[in-house]
Length: 132
Figure (cartoon, helix red, strand yellow):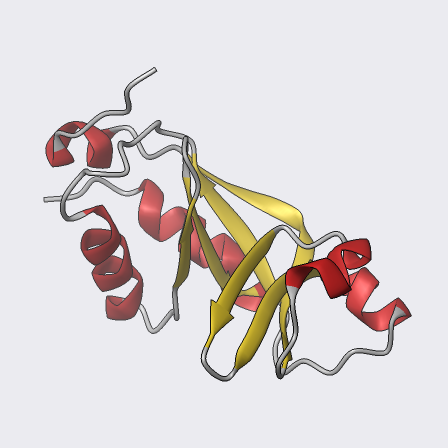
């Protein structure tokens, strides 16, 4: 199933949904995913400096893992194509205009924005407002 590529159509159909769960970004220098799969991460990025896992906050707390900030995940319910141009920029710009940081992770079907937990409701309202 192909995702939407027209930016105007995507922006009109975002339907942002905030999770009630909190997530954190944890880093593991020289880590490998297979070493930490038991933590049940929802996202993984390998960088030169090490492995970054996005974990449920409760999992990080139970495992005594350090993190800086708790985030809530906002899922854009529209099925956008991975080749769509401008979505990340439009969403990040809109949130930045309201002083909300945006950490974007794209899945095959949806884009997910991690925002500071205390700003999640404001972020949803901001993204629900019409673009343009």
